[in-house]
Image (tube, rainbow, N blue to C red):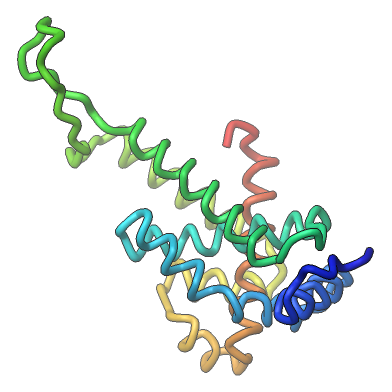
Length: 199
């Protein structure tokens, strides 16, 4: 595949990394992640104004990009493609979040009044039960992963270790921890998808 002559040196280097990543080179994935993780995170943080959501959306964006890396063509920079994936994914997330809000009409039938939308914080017993079932299902799915992925997921999501703490605990380079966690999340998603097609 030919690289567009309009690409900057940085974009050309990215494309070489993409080619290596397509061949399964974990270091190339880790380097792409390292180059853009912070920029993607801060862009998403501006959009959602919530560090936890921004972190999750960053992971999702890289997960989607790496899963579909064969679809990238070097007509434009990899970073442009990646930011587009991250932005679109974030817009979907915001739409879904808005759809789950409760709309309260202050004056009933009067169409001239504005309605106020608030987020529902009321603990719903059914939602609590569903959440517990999801956690149980997630643990069952995690057990299906290979041991190295399983330990990464357990440390990150069940014990809430930071990337740095996981790196020390498992004696792995930070880039490897991040790249393998993305891979683990993708595997988890695919297993969940096959056990629950409505996801």
